Image 1: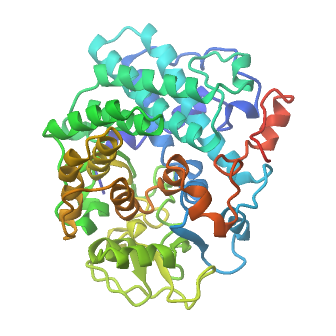
Image 2: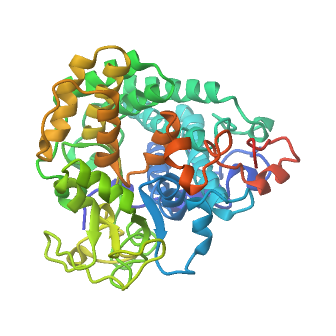
Image 3: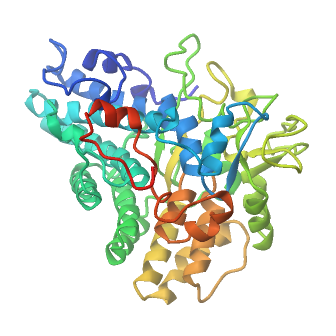
Length: 481
């Protein structure tokens, strides 16, 4: 059982602040203050921010919607599991999904529920009489988390409503232009950088830091093509001396390395015996070995396996792809099932979602596994990409080779942009970025053509039709849907 007890409890705060877990557009805009008696003490302030962190590991945040929209749409993964089980997932693998499918609504609603929680904290904590330093930090944490959630939304849907306070008015029914959404994300992260500590004590490890905010903003700058700023912020994270690469790539995704020196930000997970409400993360379970520990969805493609082989990347391949018959370094035999939907070869599974069963205590399988959101290896690759795009390719060799050296690959003295983008694929497979990377680099139409990707349409997902209807048509649809 892990120690981060600050994040374990206070899921009841969500129920206290709202009458349900629906997203903003599922009910009339909020026009009243939170439940009487709350947001009055420092403890309330901390509980409200803790509830945002706790929400991050919920079903709509890290389970089906996450793997379907951020990985199965890419060339890294296919549905997997048994033929006929959750067959609707194939609609995302071949880009035939419609605006009426619940996965889109889950993704949208999950993130707006988190944003609503953040807005409650940001709007109400300033009026609480409490230690000013703690007050400032908690608001900074809430802004970081809000920025993270808006980053998911803007990458997936483009223009999205951008409420930043409560009570919420009619703005929730209208889409904010993408450029302005990014401006809000930047503003939140700059505020977070200015007030968050660089590190925490052991009792608070896992909370958002200034380094996490810098790293996320560097990533945001890649998306909006501000490469000089991306390079600058990534370099600040690197030069801080706080972060380093885990020596063994396999260990990066195990419990012992959670919140370690490679971690900038992780979604915290817990297993508390007898408390299902806390031990509810199903991120690992939905992807784990079918017939043995989990459901076996989101499985690696032959194309990804061949990319590892072509690069001579045996280390990351072994940690990322678990084949039926493999024995893990923890001594578990991958038994699996005879076949999986979408492949004709040896059944295989996402190795980064593997959770040694000896560590299972309570709740869904693997519910004690943190979900990695931002790692130091990615910061090095952001730095390398930004340097190349900004015309300083020679300086990109050092950060790129730090990542390659960890997995015993030959060093590249004069890296190209393609070298860095391939490294991103191999390093970050199944960490939620591959589809968005293909879109932002203009490669999606070519790489995903065989899957049915339509240029001018599938760069963005459909806005959930139910929410358009609830807004009486004020919320508009993306082109092509």
